Structures are given as C-alpha cells and as structure tokens.
Image 1 (tube, each protein chain N blue to C red):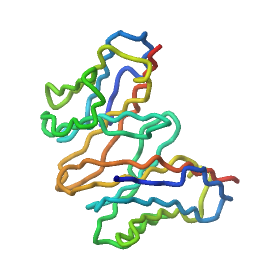
Image 2: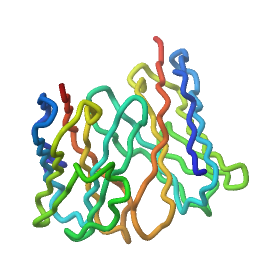
Image 3: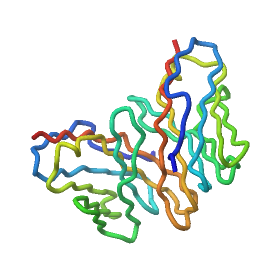
Image 4: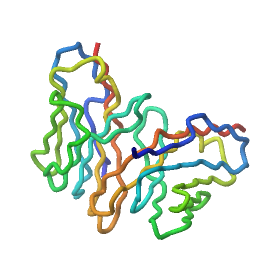
Length: 115
Length: 113
C-alpha cells in the first residue's frame, strides 16, 4: 500500500481565496483524521470521520473550515475564505478497525501558506 | 483545564547514552497513550502504545512507562544513535472507543556522534 496520500504537498495562496486539501486514506481503514500543526499550537485535531461519517468536528476553528468524506477513499478539507492565520501544515491520518489496532498512519502533510 | 506537557527544550545527548523523554498530563484519565516520531517535513510515525493497566512496554531499543498515579509517561531510547534524532510526540486517548488522540507539543532529541 502507498500509505496515506495527500495533495497538494505545498500550497501558496492569497488571503480570501478558497483552498482545498485532499486526502486518500489507506485502503480498508475505517477512520480518517484531519490535523493542523503549527509551532505555536502543535498538532491539533480538526475533525475525524468513521465510515465516512463525521464524528467529532469540535476542533474545526470556525465556519470557514469544512470537511467532507464522500466515499471511503477520499476526503477534502476546505478553507473559504482563507486567512494568513490559517498558514500551517495540514495532516491527514487514517486508522483501521480500532478493535484490532489503534495506530494512526499519517500522510506527508500539505504545507499551506496564505499571504 | 486539560493539559499535556512535554519538555519544550531540545534534549541533546551523546551517542550510546540513554535518552529519556517525559510526558506529563493533567485532568485526563487516558485509556492509552502513544508515542510518535516526527522527522522534519514529514508526518508523525507511530512507535509504541501503552494502556492504562500496563506499567511498561518495550520494543527493541525503546521502552515506555506509564504511571497513572503520577500522570506521567517516560520514553527511553537506549544505546542512542544519531539516526534517533527527531521530534518525539506523546498522544493521549481520552477514551478507548473513539480513536481520538490529543497530542503534546513534542520534544526534539539531538544525538551527537
């Protein structure tokens, strides 16, 4: 398996623009997590899905952020409109059936810079 | 309020020595705790998991302890190597039935040859 795939790897955009980050989890994994990492706040959970259903979105900073998982092999995190304070590395992670393993597998991340 | 604390300062040690990293938490009763390694420009990679009813776990040169009374986990790397240089993150699972993790800020380890 190729692991968790994220695209794009780098994104530079201007304030006010819409940003869409994409994630393909490991095949067969039931859980998908979106995190944001900054120097100041560390690694923060934004939202996670179980079997394509959003379970906990309490970490989503505000209404400008939205996430979807239309099927088991694809998820998006959208920021509209983007602001400079959204600049961070965004990670997607997936996890299999938690009855058997509780390891999260992280993608390489998308480094977002909002000017 | 709930808090997870790891050594904010980098840990510098000599090759061959044992590195010990600390993770303290308050106002949590975690079902389990995990340690991850993160290299610059990459995503975290899982290393070890220890449950609330376990005192110690080992994997090759790695050892993790979990003291729920002290609310502390210690992560040890024995016979450290320059290749062990990275940032190490501890993560708590508040409950065992969600998979949701809360991460500490991480401690950067530098092993000098």
